[in-house]
Image (cartoon, rainbow, N blue to C red; front, side, top):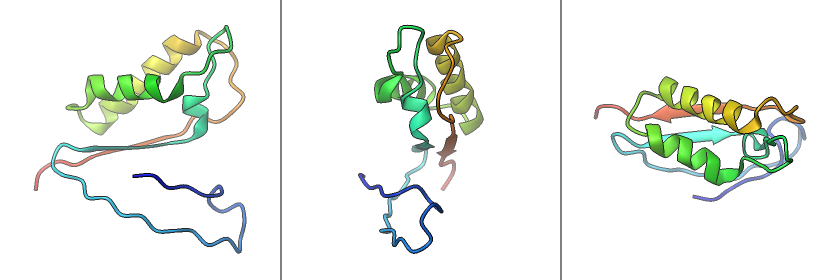
Length: 98
């Protein structure tokens, strides 16, 4: 599913499109700010969607809290103390049970 628009809440008169997705048991939904995928390592390279996807895939059967922990661990390892210029925000939802 693709979608997007301006930052939520920044423009009071903006209209947003509505999107829907069905999550089946075991599916994981990850909502993140661009600060996650644009987090830099000391060489200035970005973490990118591939780094995020790898952290999620490796833990996809675990509870949402574990997935967040894995993403944070991957980010800390990747950035190796490099200063970040943006927020790092994550929301992870994992559907359990019917």
